[in-house]
Length: 383
Ligand code: TYD
Image (cartoon, rainbow, N blue to C red; front, side, top):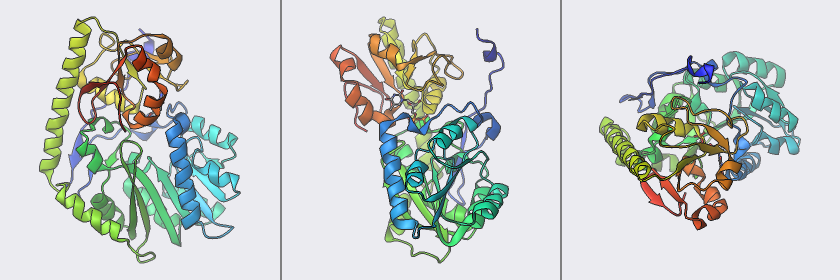
């Protein structure tokens, strides 16, 4: 048994709902230093779909919100520079703020100026002094990771030019509920934002939600555009979604209690399906060691007896083990050579890309096990 299993870090995952501001969030937050350090294993560039998405995101920002030649853009959690590289290539003044040195180093090699720091008021003040205020502050799947959300709001308030925008993307709570995507609940996801909770949280700090756009990444995300109060016109889409969220029941605790029941049902069905297949002697592997998979595996009580290994394309994850259950993580090449009967699609949010490249797996008789939006055995998965 590898020696680090003995001191393995564990935390309880539990979610709470605030009936006052409608925020859905983890109630037990993990120390930031446990999550983001120089062994951070998530590289934004690990999927083609996400590379395309970040290009669109960059174009959108450059076209709408970087008005002059000396415009300045800051990204919070800039990871390997997948977004800011597009600004860097066009010589746009930019700065990535990224606490994990290993991924920030890759960004630097790509020509992206990076500062290895957590984003907080001290960092914001420092950047203001060294670079000036920003025309745009961006965050892609990172603002929902920062437990001190009020510090984020204060930092944005300090660093943003009077007419600047704060644009961030996060998995959208309405999609998480609709798809029973209980695996979106994991240690890094401190907040499960919706339009109401974003409005309520940031308006306390004088920031106004002025536009929203749905995006088909990370299982269904929302792009939020915020600005200093009164600086930009609020689009009708914001109002439409506020009404829709009310209709969807996102302002009532009962909706979240129903979600918990659906998650339990999904968990029981998945465990039963996998146990049954194993009793028939079928070989089952996992496809992609996502953060989400840690929730599925531990919540369903799956072990290496159920899942032989998890294949993942990220070198930093290969040779390691899934948290808690200790299922080995193997290089993708193993999956290609091996002939598993079933593969559990943990990266269901990348289904289109994966289906396109795994036609052979189906040809040779393999099948997918999916659990979002429902537990099923299928030959094809639509994103
Ligand atoms: P992601 O789906 O972004 O999820 P999470 O935020 O839950 O970690 O994680 C992508 C992971 O999936 C990453 O480890 C790379 C892996 N992956 C593959 O192994 N093969 C693939 O074809 C794709 C698209 C991703």
